[in-house]
Length: 581
Image 1 (cartoon, rainbow, N blue to C red):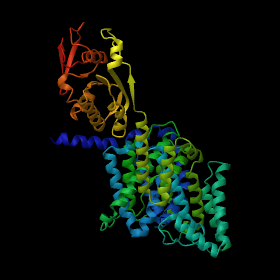
Image 2 (spheres, rainbow, N blue to C red):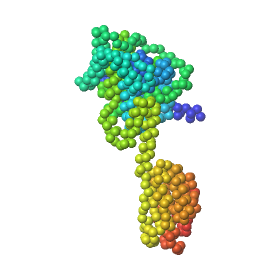
Image 3 (cartoon, rainbow, N blue to C red):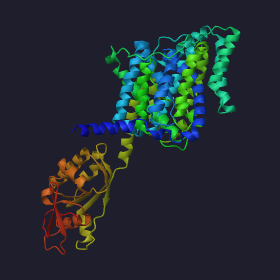
């Protein structure tokens, strides 16, 4: 018994834990992996600092997150290229959380969210991303980019963050304050940071533009003696791990769920993007969730922020030649070395320099050709995109995803419903035993095409219910692509109505699964005893003739199967019993 219980647990762990194959090809690629890791570490430094500051908890936790979460996710994650750390999307969640509860809640939220993501991995939920509509993801991304840009306005203009929860409203307030007493020196420093970050990559992709921009602005400030807000003092070592205070965990469950969802979504999206960048094994979504969950737990224990896979840093990693997860691990080591060796210099970086880098990062998150493609695709997809983007900016990320998913589901159901139709067909008898004119006049055949489900059932069956002046109606349900309980129940009501008006109803079903559902909801209870359910159209037509002509000897009797409460039996030369083949 113990072995039977333990075996599934071992198989889950074996599926999620690191394996030797993760480092296949390392002997050939180790030099490129190390070089790529150094490159990504240089690129990640200003982003880690900037997102830490933007989150409202300071630069140090951002740097700790990049080191700890970056290393853990590199070892345990499901992608060979993924680079993890603090991201702009996560700052969008953390800013209102910190404003409401203080910076101390970030650590327990990171740990709680990590546990939730690990649980999702164990339950095999990594593949659920395939069910998230593309327009929703793009709208979500655009909305996040707008919020990130708005969050940088105070630092970009050298002013403190106002106590206003909505990012756009806070940005507008800061701009109004700045307009009353403008400081053009800060604007000049911002312009320098933005220009270098945006222009240098056009000269060569390998240029660490963000780091050079930050270094240039810092140098200008140091040489000119201009007084602007800086990062401030940073610790010269990583903190020791410690359990966070879970005293208010009950109040933070909602925030942890949001952070977990965002960590999973952004990480899987980033890993999927990485799959298309090099010829390498595709990522394992469940392992990626497992690695990201552990990374968040570890980051929280070391006093860091919630982390996710970072699309921009992962792309840099791939372009720099990385082939194994050693590159992402090297990036974490490089950042750790900076913590121990250069924290004093890093602390003198002006916040306006980081704001300039993050403004360019937010701009690059919006791919214009993608936005254009979504907006010109279909009106429904454009609506999902716009609703999600607006809700992200105006409300919050959870509401945005809920609104986007709800809109996508409603529109998908509507589109699916439009494929359903009822086709009136001419009733013919291939055997030639029934007169064509008689069949055409007294027997009406309806073919049901497409889905028959809750959204279309009443509309679809209304035409059949209005049938008059015939003796027999044959319902061909063999082309029904999808049938649910509502559709089956509605079909049963139509059958009852027709039979009440003296019209005989014969139903041609597609198979046992459809028959089982129709029988379960009682749609066939008026037909089963009389044998009016068929699997062959020819048998249904031949049987229909008995209800429009005087009963007499039937030529060339067919082998007939009776349907009675869902049980299939065979009867030969039956008179008016169930007919089906």
